[in-house]
Length: 412
Image 1 (cartoon, rainbow, N blue to C red):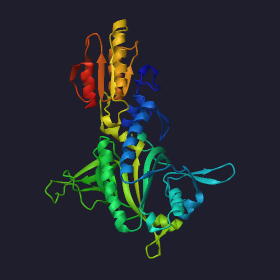
Image 2: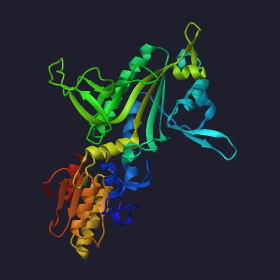
Image 3: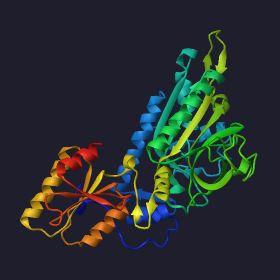
Image 4: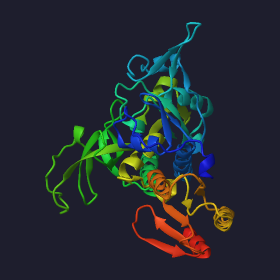
């Protein structure tokens, strides 16, 4: 991709109406643009990051046997009334049409999916089943001030599992714990599995919390990794000694990037979701729910991976693998070299953002490169001769490599 053709350029000034680091950096770097409080547009760079996250999430969900679908965002009021949530779900957007029909604008999808599953499941042989989607959600948040960490419109992965009994549910629940840890690790985040209240659905749930000063949650956790609890329900206090000898428990601000919890038979009962057991008895299906806020995930990565110069994307979710910069004017020889490097990188399957601008200083190009945060910067100039300057975004040192050496290092 040539930077001169890219839709969405960097800007120098920090948006005055943004207070969060993720919104400031993502806006300045050309990844997002604000529509209104809690609602953001994702430009090409931003969409590339979301898509990279989605690929990893899909891979891990598919490994657990999940099947992907897409459910309607405009939802049936009657189904919400059946579950009693039409009046009790505070963040539900309620839409009234010009024909006086009322709809819910989906913040979650139990009320859509469970009635469909009820049409498909008859026997114990139809279970277990797991279905997921990656789709835009809408919530009428009272506080939408943390950039893409807390939105009124946001992208989310939600998976629902269906089981014949508690034993099968518990087995799958443990499998999903591992899948979630894999997702966050692959995306460059250390997410702490944290015990939390299950709210209206169960006694417990598990949140995945990332430590950062930008967080709105707080946890009490063991540095050794054997305990973590949300402060709101924590049975212990900061400073208590870990029983396994890992030292005192710590308290930290965190961002919740995902959660998993039992639904038991709450929605099965509401919509008559049952199966015929081996004995021929109609039995309620046991359910679980597993969510990851994809756009929130992206914002969390920025909050954790940045410095005073800009974003530092983990390789797995970066919009491009390398940021190629040419310096030294537009003399015929050097222009040919720049184009040759760009074309060979492309042919090798390397994702390249090529800053081909001819009317911008070296300092501006380097500053934009650091702000955008692509993992590797490659510079071609008269000074480097027939070599390429290689520099990682998270390191100060640079190396001079041949093109072949550069390609080999990128493959590694």
